Image 1 (tube, rainbow, N blue to C red):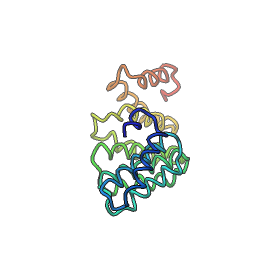
Image 2 (image 1 turned 180 degrees about the vertical axis):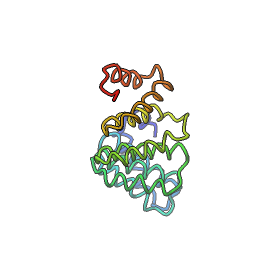
Image 3 (image 1 turned 180 degrees about the horizontal axis):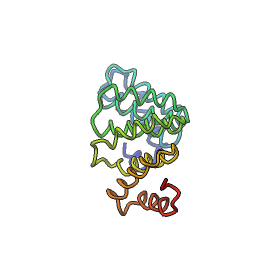
Image 4 (image 1 turned 45 degrees about the horizontal axis):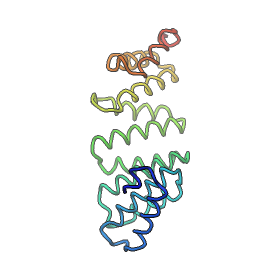
Length: 193
């Protein structure tokens, strides 16, 4: 794990693989090591091997809820990075069914929104982004979500929603870089319909 933390992913991979060769799939640390191995592969953009590691965790009967959740999240990320958005959506939706903690749920909703944008399904993306901002004032994703939502509203020519959302963004994050972008758009008058 030390090599991972120092971003020496190839050395970490070697050590994790060596460790896996010396234990069985029933060993208490098997899934944890697979998880870290998958993360190393993910960090060096070796998505095929990352996917393999995460799937091994998901198929293990000994994986903890936390290990399954993290493997599922990263498997969705792997698919998204490979532009396999339909597969990514399936993984993220499986996670929502697992009733994750609030922080994880908000991240999953955000990932679903951004993935649906990539699929060109903007109304679905809007639905997921709205779920994040409804009642979640303190989330670190709020600023980015409000910005993405405002951009989607303008693309959909939903000017009233754009104005409300962009005003909320500016009010809540007056010094934020995304607020400044929105203010520039609004100064140009292009979005005041």
